[in-house]
Image (cartoon, rainbow, N blue to C red; front, side, top):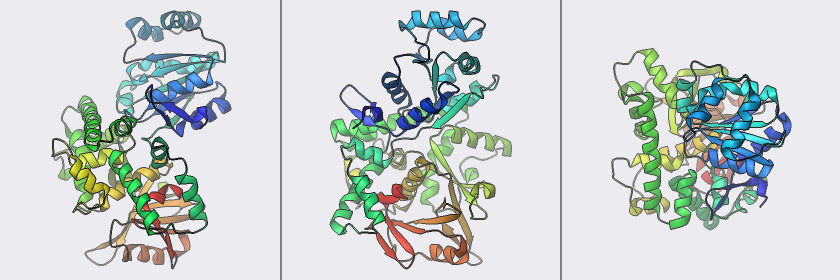
Length: 454
């Protein structure tokens, strides 16, 4: 395992994260011409990976944690007329010697010091050092309304650990190279091996990709303790929503996501959760949710074709949680904790519940982490019913419809009807399900654990 791929989570454990390579690409291609902002939800490992990157790729670094920085450090950014004095004070405060073009300054939790973010323009122009920012964007927008956002700022969106990163954390580096080879060769694993891989993906669904939750699982192998960790993270998110919306409406919209998905509605219906909101206020609440990076918006595409963003219906959308592990815990939020009995039944696929919406959330997370904007499509079946395609992704100048099934995969009328209606636009058609890889009459029956391959 190359050191450039690693993220230290604790003194005892190292996690491998893909964003490291994105940071390396930025450093090598930009060479100080821009800063980079790593944005994402809280507790996904932004600060950890950025500091580790600085340790490995620079001769020295200063990390300014604006959650802890003193008044003098915060005040440095009010007056930028003497950058030499600012750099000297920083080196004295943090007892670090900076080297021209060989050092980086990290603005951690930059949303808590808007003037520091505004200063990026002049710091980059100065050219002596590199600059990396991290931030939880649920607070950034409100804290930067009165400053100039620097154009000299690249952005990288960070997500919770994806399934491949999760398998790396479990010590498994063989699965994904083999799955890619299997898919290219159109080769089935066999029922026994497929069941093992399905158990692996269900474990990921339960634990999720929050590093703290993964760490708890590896330390204890106790899913109840993992659930406790995830609940503490969700509570932090709810507290954040309270800070930006004291009415509690943003919190209610967030907590209602599992209920809306389990109801098989063709869209999220916010006015069934909160009433008497103006259209502008509702739009503001939804923007808070989206910018928190804790949720994923999947918009209805009115004309499914390449360039789906051009046909995005902003009034029609579904909401998913950005982390499938947090989603499972939120599904059981009415309980004080989710005990190991429920988790073990979920893990063995024996819980008596329709888990289709859990698999939908899983697929949403996987597709988003791979860089896809999320879209779905519905069209009339008869006067009272619609066909629905769960997800649409593009490949080249074609599109790929994806239908997700947790059971009953032999019937896929929506997928069939869609492919007949838009036959000239289809590259590949996928039915995501819980069994082995199979190809049949144009449909690729894709095990859930192979979704990252596409």
